[in-house]
Image 1 (cartoon, one colour):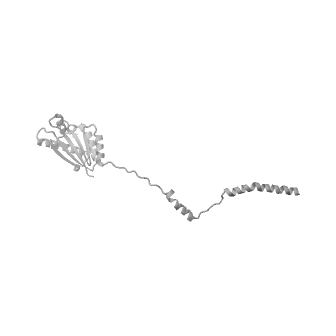
Image 2 (cartoon, one colour; image 1 turned 60 degrees about the vertical axis):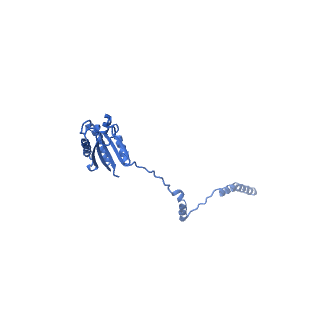
Image 3 (cartoon, helix red, strand yellow; image 1 turned 180 degrees about the vertical axis):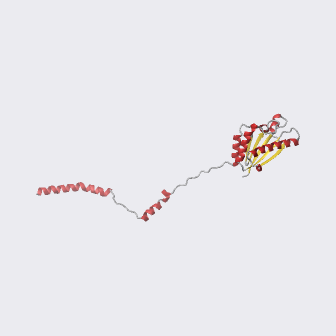
Length: 209
């Protein structure tokens, strides 16, 4: 009986030595406490983190700069009339087209020739698209012949070109025509090449914007 009691005491003692450190370890390192926050405190914590986590940064918007109205028109005219002999220039709100007389009317002709119709139709289409413009058409000649006859002839050619544009849908109220004859030469009338350059039609497009 004493022997059994002794063995029981020893077994209990050894069990206590083994289990005690484990229990102490669990109580020291493992925190099983669960904190329940009140709704007021939850709202407070959300408000405290708004600036850091909930604010969406502003994304800078890239500004798209639009090309000026007349600059776009001049660019399209240059592209469409490339290799035709038509000179296109643009300064601020004005675009100028210099068209050789021989391209539209040929030599000693007053009727628009068929070979010019594609180029003139392109001009009409762009003028219809860019309708915030006034159109001034001036005819020029060289200095050969009488001044009066040259002015009449140059005005007739300007009017014919205006009629062509009107037939293509351009409002006649946008168009002004004039005949300058041999005035304002762009080359020397003493040479054949110079006189050919002076025989021309100038179209001036003026922005209404």
